[in-house]
Length: 151
Image 1 (cartoon, rainbow, N blue to C red):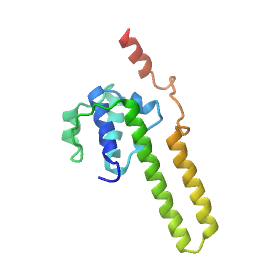
Image 2: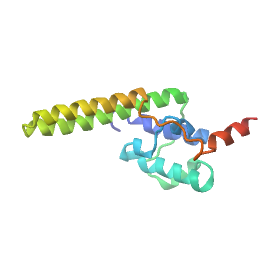
Image 3: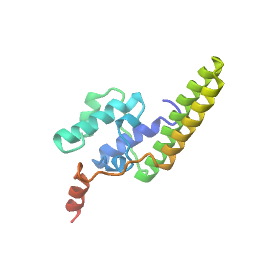
Image 4: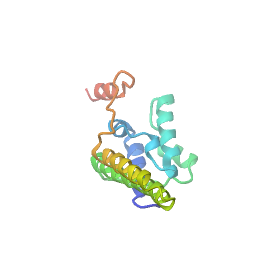
């Protein structure tokens, strides 16, 4: 796995074990936030929830995805989100630096510096959570349903 890539698998396992994706939704984290290694698993989880009203169980995921590994996760969702954001920011920064390196190699220094600044800003927004759009309760009533279940 790549640098800290295990965090994606921990997040997936946490969601499956707790049958809940709201901790991701609350931070505006979607399947697109994940690396291609696990993006299809997370897309499937969101699609399954939309279609059937629940998160797929572990056996369903194991049967559908060869790259899924069942893990025991005892970390809190806050820790998992913080580490996932670190990983997302790391990946964003690395991707940005690759573009910057190519521009420098092509002697396009001004463009390289602009891309470097933009990449740093995006990575910092990911870390700080300011890229979060919040939770649209008009489109997704799962939080209301979750609240009503607790009553």
